Image (cartoon, rainbow, N blue to C red; front, side, top):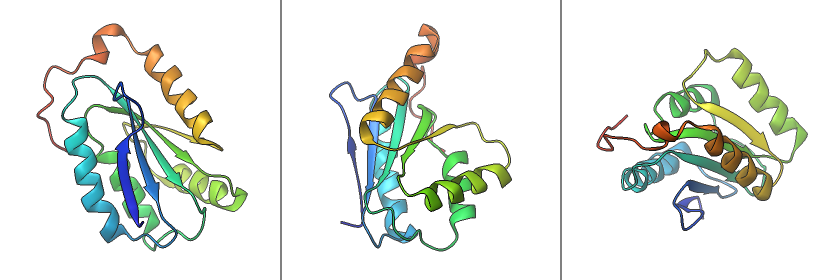
Length: 141
């Protein structure tokens, strides 16, 4: 498995990406397009979990790809949570976040899948009821 994506729950409020040990950006982008198609089938806001099971190496060009990923998120995506356990990787992601300009994506880190789900569920509950529904789900990034 390089990169996979699926709904994480029956309510279709969480999209779950799983990254294998030696994934590449070339493998990620077609899966991201698949995720956009999935999200376009719902009218409500969703959260995204990025799970790196191995917490190993990250492909080259992290900064531009990370920035573009947050800037070009699907319009229904309101929060992104990355599951990371290794302190070095957490520190690297925090450094990248600090040097990137502000994006329109709410971004968090979690240590476990359970914690990631909880962060997203709590965040979705804070949204105004009117903002939970997207009137035009045909928008593309």
